[in-house]
Structures are given as structure tokens and as C-alpha cells.
Amino acid sequence: MVERVLAGDRLAVSRLISAVEDGAPEAESALRALYRHTGRAHIIGITGPAGSGKSTLTNELVKEYRRRELSVGVIAVDPTSAITGGAILGDRVRMLRAYGDPGVFIRSMATRGRVGGLARATRDVIRVLDASGKDIVVVETVGVGQDEVDIASSALTTLLVNVPGLGDDIQAIKAGILEIADIMVLNKADREGANELLAQLRHNLSFSHPEPGEWRVPIQKTVATTGEGIRELVDTVGKHREHLKSSGELQARLRASLEEELVTLVQEAVGRRVRGRLAGPECNNLLEGVLSRETDPFSAASRLLREVYNGQKSH
Amino acid sequence: MVERVLAGDRLAVSRLISAVEDGAPEAESALRALYRHTGRAHIIGITGPAGSGKSTLTNELVKEYRRRELSVGVIAVDPTSAITGGAILGDRVRMLRAYGDPGVFIRSMATRGRVGGLARATRDVIRVLDASGKDIVVVETVGVGQDEVDIASSALTTLLVNVPGLGDDIQAIKAGILEIADIMVLNKADREGANELLAQLRHNLSFSHPEPGEWRVPIQKTVATTGEGIRELVDTVGKHREHLKSSGELQARLRASLEEELVTLVQEAVGRRVRGRLAGPECNNLLEGVLSRETDPFSAASRLLREVYNGQKSH
Image (cartoon, rainbow over all chains, first blue to last red; front, side, top):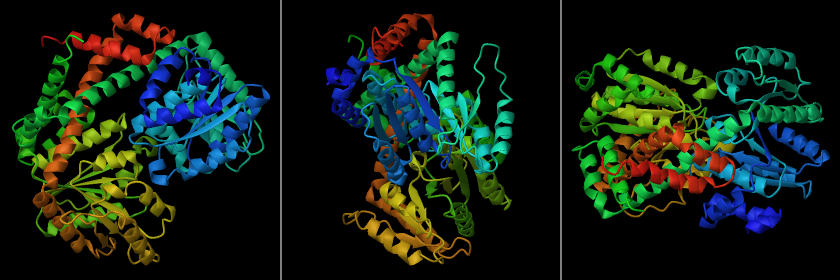
């Protein structure tokens, strides 16, 4: 499987991604083996409110990268799919697949279980596409929420898409997730209200004061439906990538992101161990003690941690 | 502080809740001390799509419980507040506060940092209100998503609110979170489409086949704006509470929820320890090894876990 993924075999890639989504044991061993072949692709995150034209924009970006003879993987992530039944993504993915271009690989990912699990699975799927030889991996998320912010944290260049006429959403972006943007995209720039939105975005961005040598978040106008501004957007992504490398920020970001990943992996391992112990009869007294209020959850958790890691001294 | 909270002092309750939200160290010691005074209140979760009238319904429930001379705490949780700036909740809380009734305590909670943190903070705030002597604690969440499901898991009786005319949201509820409902509320039951929605909900519920003695999820029609059906809804909540107790399901739910809490508490403690170690110079080689692809994150996480818990042998 690993060899075939490295050779870019679509079926192998697709199967490994399914294994990753299912948390299958063979996925981890494949990911271990693939890891040293990763780190080549540039990862672009696309996020923004519903109705901002993200999927059309993704479409146009893919076309432009293909014109530049770069291969592209697209991951469309819907953290709300438990609620929407995944219908939104289905449509997008069908649209993108219509190309039939072997240089493009499209995959949708929907919530399975906990949201943290989705962010982690997205990171692993990015690695599979990276190892399979894709030059660019685009991660598009539906909506703007904490989940999307977590998922976008795997991206190296994050595009935050805005459109005129969404009203309060501008306020929303002001309050919340402005800081994750490396490039602001003002999409549907031919619409009424575009100039007001541009002024608003400039105003919002004016509060960040990049030092000399730091990245200054640009605002790129696009009309995704006609392709206007897409070439310039792709150029700006390239400039951001160069900036990340030359400034040393790339290494700093990768390191911070790795630290978070290691914390999560350790916590998962500990969680499995603790759950295993709680399922056994030796924890009955502990649980009963808390339920009857003889002790409290904090004390019980400390005891549990000590018990679980006393058994681990020698191995 | 603990004594004053137990006596129901509003200012002390309010301050402790702020400390809990801030993750202040004095919050944990207070929660430890308060824990044995908890477990008395009945916890009601209210969830459902935007526009389903949840806040009006909460309002009416509060009034009805007050008529029955029960004291009520209300926690309005907005997991999307990082995006909306918390505006939605502000309005609701102002509306509810207008009563000026000393038997009612209202608090809004908004996202601070990670969503997991919000679910945990909600659970702790429920305990504060419980210990302060509130007979009923209502937890109302904005929206229907995974975050809301996590937050609702602290409730003993969960009301899932539906209204006619939201179209696709019915499908949504079908796909996703039906299973968390103990009582289905068909609100705005005087509106067009109410009968179709009732039929749809009955159809959805028909797929669950409760065993004899198990709870059968009822559908309660309400018109929150006129108070219609509210008395019956409160009676149904009471029946559910009785069922939980007499069937032994209460103990099972409390135990399952405690197990999850203990896993989270242990994971948090481990996370702090791992983060502390990663911040020190002894992890530089480990991190560099992964970044340069000499090793992979899974192997690094295993090593990190061993290193962190070798230092813990004797204490």
C-alpha cells in the first residue's frame, strides 16, 4: 500500500484515506512509513462564511494550478455534516470531480465522532496526499467556527474569504477569526457593497501592526465565477510561501503545530489506557466513591493517573 | 467563598462562576469542596436549531417552575460566540434578567479558547448552581452541532426543540442528533406545517424500539409565546426524572458521564505535563528529529509519554 501511495496510485490513496477516516490500525503503520515522504506539498486552507463562494474559488484555484502544471489534492471538510447529512459537500465534490483530470484528487471528509477527531484525520489525509506527490493540497472547510479554525491550523497559507452583502458576518469576522488569515480574499468583488467591504477589511486589518520583515496580510479581490483575480491570488499564495521560508516562520509554524500534535497523540494514548482501566472491575470503588460524594472527580482523576502509570514503570 | 455559595449568595455564585470560566486555581479548590453538596438539582438541556424559539421556551419553563415554587438556574451557552461576538446570548440574558426574581439565577457562557473547554466549564457551572441550592438547572445551547451535543451530555433530561417551516433542518435532526433527545418539543405548534412536522417526528422516532420499561421519547407540542403546553412539558420532564431514578438509568448515565469526565481530567493533567516538557530544551532533539523526518510523530509521542512518566515513579 505504502509503495503504491508513493507512486501516486489513486486507488491506493483512496483506500488509505478511508482507513485513516475509520481509524483502522493499518492506517497508523502506513502513516508512519509515509511520514518521511511528506513536507513537500504546499497546504492551502480556504475558510469563510456560507455563501462566500468558497467552492467556486477552490475550483478556480485548482484550474490555475493545473495551468501551471502543478498537481492538486483537494480535501473538502464539513464539520457540520452530522447535522446536514453531508449534503453540501456531496454537491461540491461532484462538481470538482467532473474534470476527470488525473492531476487532481478530490476527497470530502465529514464528521465521524468527535470534532477533534476530524481535525486530526484531516491532518493525516493531507499527509497522504502530500506523500502521494501532490504539489498543492487545498483544504476547504464549510463555515467559520472553532472547528474550522482547528482544521485550518494544518494549512501553511490560509485564505479567509469574504463577500459583500453578508452584513453581520463582517462583524463576525472582525470579532473572531481574522487572525488566522494569511490572505484576505474579497470574493464576488463585482457586487454592490464591495468597496464598503474593502474599506471595512482594511480598517480591521489596520489594527495589526506587522514589524518590518513580517507578513502583511493582503486583500485580494476575486470574482471566482469569471476567474477574475485568480491568477493574482495564486501569485500571492506563492509569495506567502516564499515569505514563510525566507523568514523562518515556516519552521516556527511547523514546530508549534508538531508540538500540538504530540500533545494530542500522547493524550489519545493515555485516554485509551484510562478508558481500558475504567472498564475493568478494579475501578468500581473509585467510581462509586465519586458517585456517592465520598470523594470528588479531581482527586479521583489524580489517583487514576497514578494507578495507570505505576503499571508502566518498566516498559 | 464555599460557605457563601452553599448559602445561595448571588454575588459569591457569580464570582465563582467567573473563576471557573477563567480557569482560576481557586475555582478548582472551591469545586472540590462543593462537590459533595451537588447531585440534588435536576439538569435540563434545551437544544435545537436557530429560530426554534428555545429562549422563549426557556423563559416559559422558568416561569412555570417558579409557579411550582422551585428555584431555577439558567446557563445559556453559545459555542459560536467567537464568531458572533456573543451578541445572541447578550439579548437573551437581558430578557431573562428582566424578572428580578431572587429564585432565578441566569448566566451566559461563551467560547473561551477551545470548545472542549466550554463543555467542561458548563459542567462545572452546573455544579456551582446545584450546590447553591437551585432545584432546577436549565442549560440552553445555541444551535445544533457536535459542540451542543457535548454540552448537552451534562443534562439529565434533554429537550430537542423543533419548529415547522425550517425545511432541511428536519432532515438534519433526522441524520444527526435525534438520539440525544429525551423529549421532543414541537414548538410553534400553531404554525402551518405543524401536523406534517408531527408526522415526520413520529416517523423518525418509530425507528427506535424501546424495550418494555425503557423510556419512550414523547413529542410535546408547545406554543412558547402563549405558554400553551408548557405545564404539560414540565410534567413530562418530571416523569422523565422519575423514570431515570426508578429504572436505574440515572445511575448508569451518571457513571458513564463520570467516566468521560475522569478521562478528560487525566488527559488535561497529562497535557499540561507534556506541554511543560516540550517547552524545555530537553525536547529539542525530539522535535528536530520529527521535523527533519528522521522519525515520525507516532514514535515521538510514544517516547515523550515514556519520558514524562519515568519522572513520576516515586510521587
